[in-house]
Image (cartoon, rainbow, N blue to C red; front, side, top):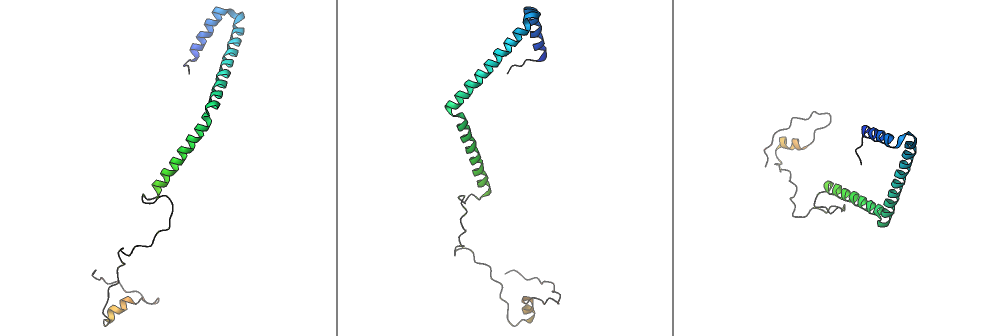
Length: 136
């Protein structure tokens, strides 16, 4: 509150010693301390009474809770995609207009080498190197 350093306090003490004298200085310091304590207590009581009257504690709690809820909503929105409303609804099956899965290329039935590629190799046989096929 006040920016009073040690040197300023020492100066005030010396001035008080010169003005009041060594006999009355201890009583004056004691009385000043008592008055300052009373003022602090009365201001604290007034502040507490005013806060009780206006419900400042309850308002602070509500504001704190609202801030926490807002932060929680922001976190959920940053995690969830923007299309979701926040509730985890089961995903609907794909619509019939969706792209059908790609079909495997049809191979001629008479080609024995091609037919062997489709059959998986036995566990004891070494698999042959894959051959390159042109993409349809």
